[in-house]
Amino acid sequence: MATAARQNPKPESLPWRLVGAVMAGTLLNPLNSSMIAVALLTLRADFHVSIATVTWLVSGFYLAGAVGMPLMGRLADRFGPRRVFTAGLLLVGLTGVLAPFAPAFGWLLVIRIVQAFGTATAYPAGLAVMRAADRSGRAPAAALGAVTVASSVSAALGPVLGGGLVALAGWQAIFLVNVPVILVGLVPARLWLPPDGAAIASAPDWFTTVRRLDLPGVLLFSGMLAAILGFLLSLASGPEWLLLPAAVLAAVLFLYRERRFDSPFLDIRLLAANHALLGVYAQFAAVNLAFYAVFFGLPLWLEDARHFAPDTTGLLLLPVASVGILITPLAARLINRRGARLSLIIGSVLLLAGALLLLPVSDTTPVPLILGIGAVLGVPNGFNNLGLQTILYEAAPPEQIGVASGLFQTARYTGAILSTALIGIIFAARGASSGLHVLALIVAVVGVLLVVGSVATRR
Image (spheres, rainbow, N blue to C red):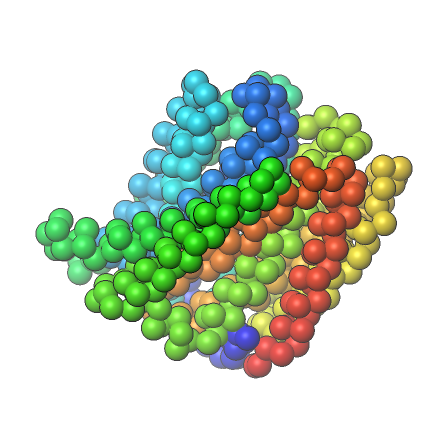
């Protein structure tokens, strides 16, 4: 399990305008991942596809992000975080313009995947900027908390904003809204992010640069994740068994190459030697499996079983994402005083409690009670996310903070991918209410494992 961050009396030294610029960019990823939750049924009807097919808009986004985060972190370490940060913003803006004109579902899925690569730049590049500028010698809990709050606000507003946009102007609006957001984010990025260092700016020739990106490793990693995801999603209609040996083969080849290549996409030796990082990634994947199972499963139940409109569903989902915002400053103070371990224990216990409260929910459960349960399920985000980010910040080698933080988000996407696959399987085989109860039971099991893991975490 992860080793919690130690106390250090040195003060934080990050300028807040720099943190603000990072916050402006990092809100794009949770915004685009959460807005789609209330548009899935509308997209299914417009493109005449099944619920299992339309969930590829979620799974494909997370699959691309799982690959894109460490890749963009690698690019940030190599070419400079400021350059990569702004390029990602521009890519998101471009996809926002193109998506409404998609002639078929396949085209929309491709654009959505490209969008995911664009949103994948801000977090690893942003943490690389912060780590380079930090002179305090400790994880800046307040600054990391501010970035977490920005992401939580974005995720919380996503369903509300998405529901209103879908009701007002159709699903196309959830892509177009990125354009003004990008324009707002580019200004502080250009003004307040420090220029990339001279050593980074003097890149080698293109052949050497492309070779160091380890594109074969990227492709093998992508193929492994895609095969696993494809197999999981096929379980609802009929298992595609050939995908399992394909995933195993891709994994074996990937590990073989990464252990022998001098500039690997993922440094397997680093991960094997750094138990704290491995623990962080495992716990973060589990936290997000539980969160996204609720975040995407609950709106499907609200619209299918309770027949709420998308805009109403977005409002009912607000406590799940928003309560963590209020908790994050409290978690930051707790981590500064007591370390990350206690924060993880509190978050895991509350996640288990929320899952148990969700088990008896039925088609007649009063709306205020649903909101209350959503609030309980939202609390753990502040404690778990910031606690794990704090450990990551101090456990990662400074020269590889970009790729290490990218892998942190890969763990997030791994949990999200598993959750969407589970939703596709469970809701295709069961009614909405029965499917919600199965999801709640899975979240409860994950909660138990996280409680045990958090208690076992050493200081």
